[in-house]
Length: 493
Figure: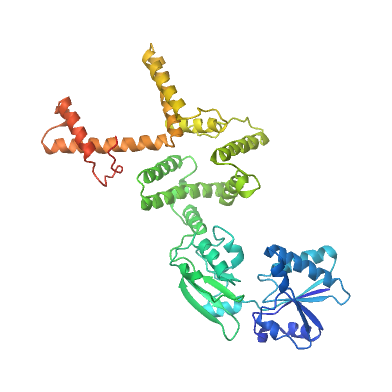
């Protein structure tokens, strides 16, 4: 028989009547840790054992919990059984409890739970909160080990077991991947004890403190402006509902095609302009299209946003075995080669014809498509050794264009020349599509400057002589217009 008993948040006045009755009838008790105020208040006739030494002997918390669980299981096999006591409630932040119950079920050993008050209720009193208002509960160690917090930022969160400055430093970095550095947070310590205290300060100051204990928790309030992905999904679902917008309700996958393409190009324009503020806005508009399509799919019974995210998340993890597995790579080239091999294997498993060029959209602009084809081929080592080889091929293509005898042949050779230029850009680390967009923007800006200069003289551009035109072009190249709306100034064209 295994009895798992909750010792409450620390003050023995929070012990349940059942817990008091069980403790009075015992001769010995095993506690997960003595680092809890309630242990000192246990009845004096009890022999108290603890597992504190296990924490120093094992390298990971998982190993600690597994060892404690197996030790409790063996103690439970005794005729007298065992009473295992944990801080707070057995079902709040107690990983050993779940493991003990699983092991006991497999061994046929009965388990009795003696519930205890958790730290949550006293913490809620200090904060003046109702847990049913969307409160999220998390473990500091678990959140600190992540790169992005598993929290909805539009809901309050209570993060428990923040017991050291080292954990606080890692926790801060994880939270700052979602919350701004100045976001106010509240540190709570010894909730449920007379000496309970709390302090509110900006998130970035979290690891500036050193007063952490095993009873320390962190309260993270919602963002000032709603910013959760779920909140945005609800907004779009509302638009599509009978109570929503007539225009939004009429849309379907096909009617939104042009919107998706337009928003993608506006993101590219923001990137070309190196404008973070505009990029933020344009990425939001692109996200709108993605969520809109997913909501239409939900209503049609096709798929959900969760399935979209699950699919791409699984794919990314599967194609990065050097990050999420045991594979070792020597550099970027090997990463790309492995990526291509994994893709070919995935296609073979689905019974699809395996081509390295599959997946390059047919609707891509031609220059971007040429670069993508070259990159895919290069992953399979079908490529020039270096840029010098591409330059030689470029000269060959120029000679072939000059020697072409008819327009159709010349057009074909010109296409080969453009394809080769795209590969040269790839070898030099240049995005040819972006480079051409920027060149177009420079030309348009300078040409408009020429028109404006000539108009100020009361003339028209077509009235200039070739020599005047050349001199004016040289002038606008040397005097670019800063802050022009169609691209950053660049004197290189």
